[in-house]
Image (cartoon, rainbow, N blue to C red; front, side, top):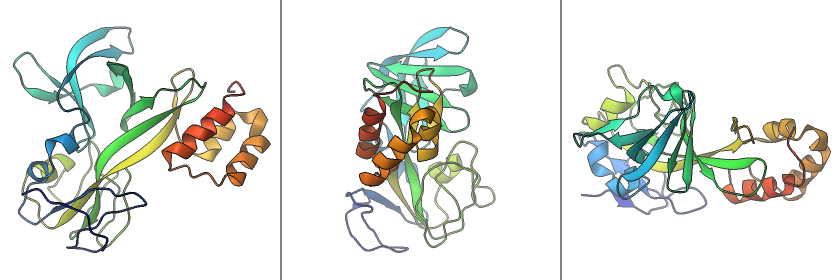
Length: 247
């Protein structure tokens, strides 16, 4: 049975919708398997695998049927045998194009989706299904986004994450959960400059990219009370900065 609920009460063992917007929260009971409870349409960015192109740093490119998995934070593909696999040797990747959408790979931090805009510095979004509540202790070095709460001592799961002894992010999601969990979709944001270099979306980064215009940017941010975790605020800020050429 799908565990998708829209309550407003927070706490272990309770279901809640979070943040300023209604975000579906998936509750997993002890003994249930995360990957079977969360619907496929929520785990994957696309309804099905799409034809795309993988571009490598050495100039090579390959066609593939691709889909981004939010739960594992992986770009997956279907091979000639019909098996679903994750892309390996990710550090050799430059970017992935699926239709008009472009994804960049960040070393050890997974994939970000470029948000198209006619500005010199563009915005990119990283989406993942993150653990926001846990009834058991989690330990991780992941760089994902997560809310604090009872039992939480980690950010969201990422490749290579370690949880309780014997639990990697992958077998935690594909085996029976040792305790109650709650997951929700989370987004984090990055700036992409004209040389396709990727930076975390924060004021210090923008001031570095537009070094000659620090005072104007700081005034705009403060006057408009911009929030660097809100997509619309970041889009407005980059439009404002588009009047200059980046450093």
